[in-house]
Length: 342
Image: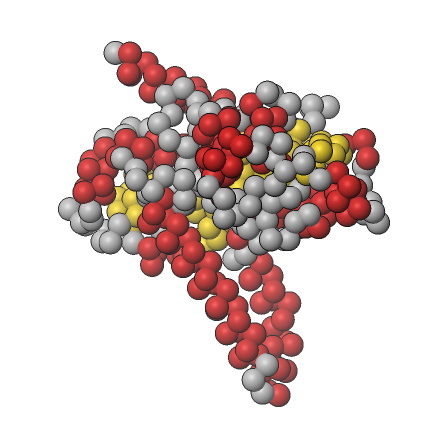
């Protein structure tokens, strides 16, 4: 039997902590026998929330942490000063090879800064992007970057495209994933300076399936398997995507409850609609991994429920079993390093 995947969870991070991270840990242990989970945070609080939950005690360890990093704190200062916080301890476990993955719904800035400072990038990787999966009419697309590198350079976007392609191939089983550059038009000459400089570089890459520029309105239709962009545009697109989906669901529910006729019709299509809407729920796919680090760091939404966090655990198991970090290192990091030496 393969070794257990060691997954550290920030039990104090997020709007719904510690109840939802703790519940997610118990739920994940019931869904997979491939994980050992470390819950990091205030021990007495974690153990109180574990009461009444059924889980394999041999595969769950509580790691005490006396400090918490708040959302409003300066990320770098917090990482440096709060050395006994759940985020810092989790990232150190990755760096010290005591865990294979770290999941947090806490401060995005602290997780991103800590990932760079404590875990570190693979050799040759210039920037580590956040890469969430977006549900589309054709399945899912990977948006890379969505929040880690606001001021990106063309060379960064090229690496994002390569890492994203590896992720979609080895995690999602897409043999030759298509790559699109997020832009304001599909014509090659469109866009700002970053897009115009990046386009020919992507076009010249023989190891990715670049299909050109894509517009944001085409993302929900599954225009490309990998959507490459800088973190500013990516984060705007992601939040609009999520906000539109949330508003759309509320509109559907409102329409179904607006009259007796619509209530009857809603009851008739309830099961089919529920199944369809489930495929459009981003939380079904876990969190957003930071690709290109010396270990796996996954960021979940600040309001993550136990379902999203549980799926993030399953995502970490698949990521580790696919040896994706090693593949990024061999396919990108070592290649980039050799090119720099030349």
